[in-house]
Length: 390
Image 1 (cartoon, rainbow, N blue to C red):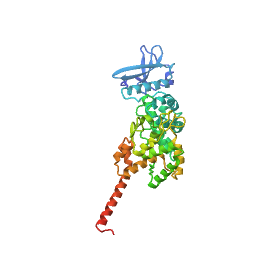
Image 2 (cartoon, rainbow, N blue to C red):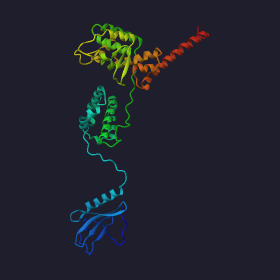
Image 3 (cartoon, rainbow, N blue to C red):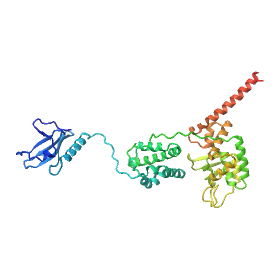
Image 4 (cartoon, helix red, strand yellow):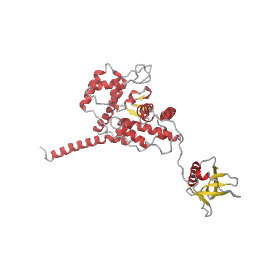
């Protein structure tokens, strides 16, 4: 980038002391080159004025750039400018790192763009993600600028959540990742700079709770006792038992979606879904009176919102002496009962509305138990037939 040195050129350490000297004047201007920074020089004109300059070769052509007079520009600043110009010329044509302008804080970013981002989410997902931002993400990153958050910051946040807050981290980190992805689309972060990418989540032991025949009888007896006082809640519980549906699919059910022998849901966790109704479910549905002030099958007192089933269930399960049974465990128990009745996994997946085969595969170990019990019965019968057992 710097032209070859001429042997006859004058050379010296160009600093402030040298620039203040009275240099000899000639009829034509001449140059003095710096002994440390190649290309940096001082021009001495016949008028007695001294000028800092830098000479370089850029794309095959020689260029001389005047930096300023010595009495207006200090030697240190002139040297720094010359060094920067030479460096830019040396890097010309090479890929440059994208420069990200000053970005807002995470709090300002969320306030400005949350509505745009949440349009692609379901209402329940939007509420859950907002809680994750408000309770778990904002206290840590709310005051930090969008472009300043790096992977080490996410690692420190993850380490701080070890223990009781591991579940909160697992739920919050996808929300934070979605925010960074949207920031990249808005050019507030460099493409591919999402610090949450590849961040491992805490491994949690999956809770699998299945009702036993005795527990089914206990729940059935308690439902019969509560039917007179809380018929709507009892009907919801029985539909959950007989259909394996998710609780939100039943509590948010509308009459326009009821088309016996099925429920036709326009949307669910996995998209549009059909819930097939057996004879027991149809009998339950036939016993529900339709209210004139609401399109919901199970409305609350005002008729504007679904019935709050969760609060009732927490009290009800204690009455059954089953305080550890979650509402979602009824869905697991439906699948386990189907496997015990030798229903194929593919059929169970369709009954439950699983979009992916891998989701139903977690019940495969129950199918193995059924096969193992069948093999034991067959082998026992054969052993008795050949006289190995009395």
